[in-house]
Image 1 (cartoon, one colour):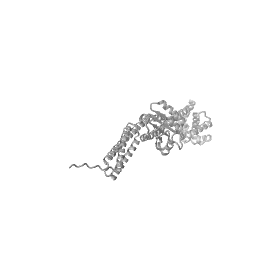
Image 2 (cartoon, rainbow, N blue to C red):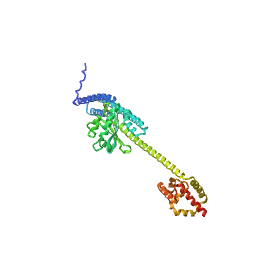
Image 3 (tube, one colour):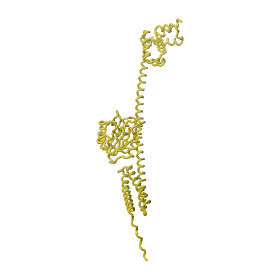
Image 4 (cartoon, helix red, strand yellow):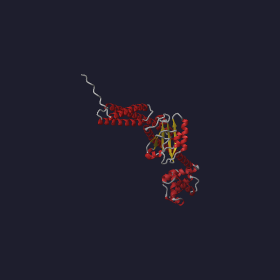
Length: 398
């Protein structure tokens, strides 16, 4: 007796609806696979792709829960296959995103290493935008300085088009947007964080004269703020590649901006130290010249006066100046002038006398002039000579 094949139970309306949803999820998976392949080639942003895959994966998980809970004969196998494919795709997107992020950070590190050897601020400013394009991988980069609450162009680099870069730089010098509450850069100052501007032409926070002049579609921006003090801003985009910027571009620019800020501050400090060093060398050279002039002044005068001064100085050391000579000089000179005269007799210069008495050189010079006038001496040598004569006379009198 032949057995009739079992009759297939008609699908319920709910089962039909579920299978249709599963089919749509599978179709969505195929679309995402194609999307992923394009993204791997650089034609799409990985953060958007990852969000789409996560959304599809969550929807598929919902289908599995519905099928398991409500259907008498659920198409679990098909739904699970969709979920597994989406999960694998999600992992692949994550891996690709991580690899690209690591590569971007590696390029940033290389770019910053090229700036560390620079000792000139002007060179560092120009090289910053060049390194963002040549090494980090952007097509265009702009450095703005913060000057009197305005954004002023510092440097512009356009990959492969220096003439356009020069034209855009002139635009940044001419426009000079004010950093008021409506500008997105003001928001960066307040938040101390980078931003992605997805639609520069229509975003109300952008300066329209600049974005139209640059023909910007989307760009990333980051503040340059060593130790929390904002000194400028960096902008960058993928103009020639024709693709929008993404989170990885934002984070790469932010990392570069932080490193550039510290390098800029270090180079500024180095320049200031070199300037101070040069000034100190000039001051020391001037002091040496003044000392030479003073020594030359001491050596001026007649040979007879110098001989007498030297002989009297030796006699003074040997005989110990008497109180009688001091009394005579005290009638002519003040106490401070007498101290200065004694040090002049010891051969000290004005600078050394100032150090000895802890007074200024100008004060010493004034005392020397008074001593010369009161002793009616033409120069230091003659004044010392007369002083020694008085001392020797007092010594013999004693």
